[in-house]
Image 1 (tube, rainbow over the protein chains, first blue to last red):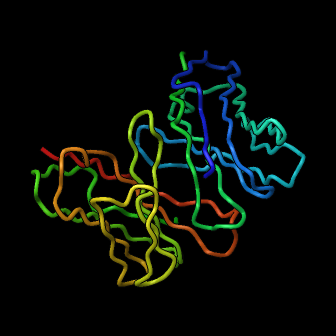
Image 2 (image 1 turned 120 degrees about the vertical axis):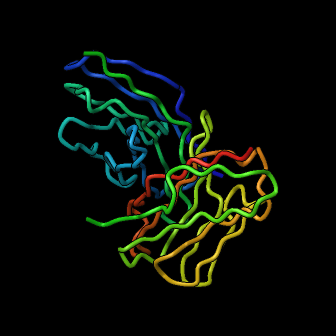
Image 3 (image 1 turned 120 degrees about the horizontal axis):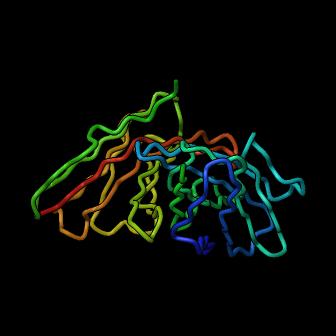
Length: 115
Length: 114
């Protein structure tokens, strides 16, 4: 079965600085999708960014970008110009392209933003 | 705004009670999911449903059952609640159209079993 590992339980960043959250995954599949979700104190999970494994270009969404290294099975999230509202739990997730119902989540990284 | 609504934000129950967690989505999604969220473990799939009256076990179905009588509603049932079922429960839904479709989540139910 696929597994997702987030090795950083907690991270902190100064407001306006850049932070990178790490994620690695294990799979034998060739086609899949990767996601970063944000869970603020309101508990509402919000999609931050998604990456298709067949695309070589790294996905970007405004201040959020990923570094997708398929051979290394690594999928890190970079947050630029960090804002106080970025403080949240961040979950990395893997979804098989062959099974619509199989989404695997990492343990999460709690990000603190210091003013 | 599209919505996944969980009926309770906080719930306190006694061991042995039968507990119902309700989830409703307004997006006409085929797929619905129940996850359990615990610190250090992330989200773990309990059950999912891909159609009315259809259900599949996830990774941790023991002690739980589900019901999907209508497309928009997916219920999680704890037949006899135990203290180790104290957790955050998240409901989610998605379209069956493509596997790159994101999940839409509810705001979670924090269940405490005393």
